[in-house]
Length: 243
Ligand code: NAD
Image (cartoon, rainbow, N blue to C red; front, side):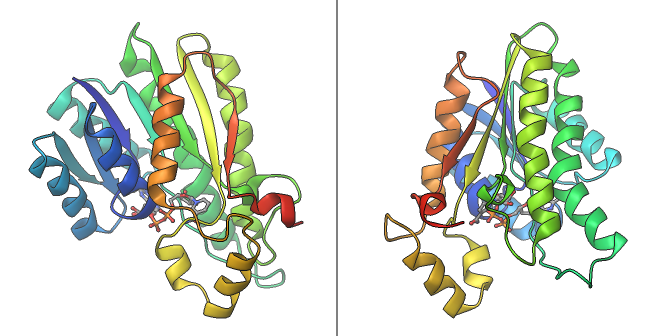
């Protein structure tokens, strides 16, 4: 059986992706600090008679990336697919920006993708591989969020990194991005309720996106050898109505 690494899969989109892919892949579940959630995701997969391990590792640094690949290799051998989903948003208004904030947003959302991809490629040997990067509509020109410039810039970087790597690594490896709009995860639960209502009203499909809908799109991209360097927007039409 092939193996997939799903970064940041203790909750939300990553968890839905890990569960969805477990019917066809051994799954490496990961989180930075959420050990309980990460173990739960792996346990849910193992209880379905599929195979998963949980590895706690901070992927914004090379030591965490090595730790994750070492554990993957020990449990399953080389990984065949990589889903760079780990990410975090923290808003910081202009004027309050600090080096620490920019460093945090860029390493968490962008550098982690680059370091994970770089470690993934050589361990494939001559086999074909596939990478899916979870970006955001906030990374697309004109849809950045006021108060979250560093996050928007990092996700724009993820979209462009996807294209740059797709060109560099074709035809052996396909690399595509998904840019979700509002997905029903803890991110929505944490947000101010009046803001959430405004977002919901701006959704032409009149609801937020279910994490399983992102998981299905990830599986689709993984199955397509003719698609590489694409950025697939899944936002229920939000970006048509908002600018
Ligand atoms: P979430 O907060 O539920 O999960 C984030 C996961 O990333 C957690 O498992 C966390 O441990 C992990 N993580 C964070 N930093 C990490 C690090 N340095 N190393 C390893 N793991 C790390 O978030 P979510 O809403 O499911 O979002 C998942 C991805 O989708 C993120 O990249 C996010 O930016 C993106 N996204 C989410 C939405 C949304 O509406 N929820 C919209 C657009 C894009």
